[in-house]
Image (cartoon, rainbow, N blue to C red; front, side, top):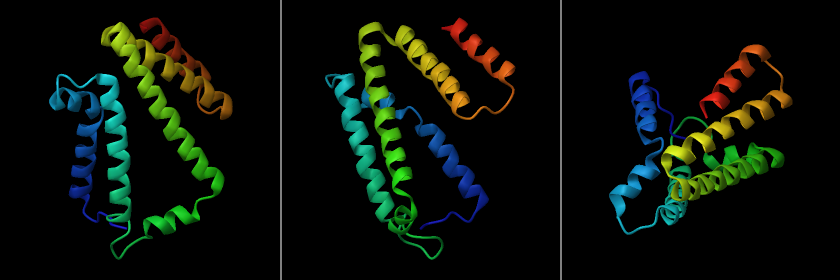
Length: 149
């Protein structure tokens, strides 16, 4: 696998990654005014999947350090692989629903409600599964998010 050995290059790659967060909505504006927002996300997600596979079998399989992509994939347990696949499916379904909500209610209404509820549910579900940290501080933050919504 290709491993970045230089700290400045690693920081640069992290910065580039941060610039790409949420890029599908901005890329849609660049693509076309006639392309429906909901349909664009499908195409964008499929494109990201294909590009990820291309990178996995090229950058993830070449180089002198580390294991290849298939060797890494082979060492994962079946349960872990299915959990990762299910997580990706749920993530993309939630984005599709968020895009539909934005189309119906607008960004100012749909985004805070959708993302706020996701944050609240995520905190509660994760805390029930693995109670760690100070629950008082954690749930004061959750109440703050609910009030903000």
